[in-house]
Length: 157
Image (tube, rainbow, N blue to C red; front, side, top):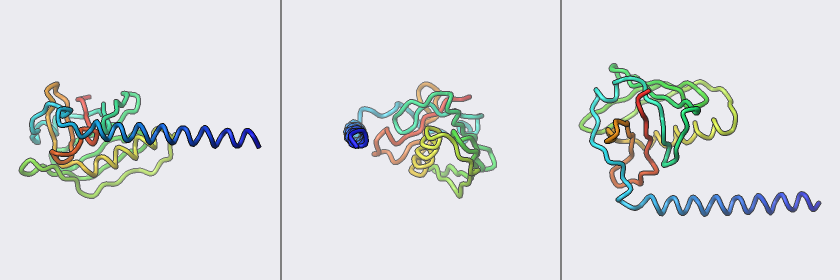
């Protein structure tokens, strides 16, 4: 009985700590000076090869996660989300990046990979801009006034 009670206390403390970290991250994300120095990317940048994700919603992603993205010149995209292969369509028009219907395989993976995949797809739904980072990276970002934590950052693989 005591072990079960201690487990709940530990769980409650972890949830409190997680909530606190999320709140601090949200507050930090509203500072305008945190923006990634970048300029608008054109279709030639997007279709220049395979991209590997290095940052997901403000958090570094190791190369071991293996999240990739390829934009084809014909308006199709595909990649690996850390657990499943995915595919869809894209369009870049007047600086606005939009995605069409997307699909993926339905494999189950370890919890960390599933969490990465979920956050990747969740963040991807908010993307409206493609930017070229000063370091050659590709930044997929939401609206200009959104926090940097809602961006995806890739390097050429």
